Length: 329
Ligand code: TRP
Ligand code: SF4
Image: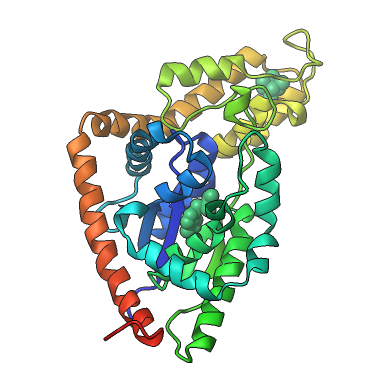
């Protein structure tokens, strides 16, 4: 038996945030040592919601690959590619659409949710409804054994297993494995104002932020509002700075909580300590990004090679699929 196969993807919608780094990318970086990994920049998926304005799409694909490499994904070890370069995804999606009941897609919890959330968009489209099925094709075209995703995506992987089962049953051949879900560990990071981190709130820290920006944003973070003077006892549980200490100052976290409760540290100094930890964590990423951003040709070459390797594997699957669906001559 060869190595187990993993596939995952992200929609290119702009520079990744700290939450993406901790929630997903850091996880991928670990998995790359244990599995044969396919990592896809899913640009077709981005178009399911941004079909009316593709002007930034190409740029966002570059930014995404640069973020991935900066975080430590190894382009030799992994297959890093753009979805739209491997047409087999579209072919498999089409063939799956022949036997996938509409109700599976209509019932998908993310479907109604997203339509609600993006109410300003017309998402009553064929492509948007079919999004999870395209995702199933992304995964199954590599016969992946497992898919690392966030909890919100779990229903899509469940549907992927259903699609695999239905295919294998209908055509009486075990072409597809039923991929397992590897849940990303969530480390909840609020935005700098304490609300959910979100571009629309303008409270985001990007993973590739320059050190001075990191420090500036930390200095703007909301602390315990009940604390007036520097030696008042503070409450770390309601403090944004402390939420970050919890993630980035692993060992020092309990000490921070104690000295804060006893009023022995001022918020300015506490923020300084957080800035130091955060900058130390992000600095190597930032440096790699500077180099990569100046070298577009290198990034393009990674995508070219990645597409070639992805296509080889996808083509093997499609041969079997075409054969059992009466499409070979
Ligand atoms: N739907 C995923 C998201 O929005 C992105 C995605 C597309 C994906 N295809 C995938 C994730 C395949 C895992 C595997 O986050
Ligand atoms: Fe928050 Fe630190 Fe100030 Fe306590 S000392 S309120 S943890 S910034």
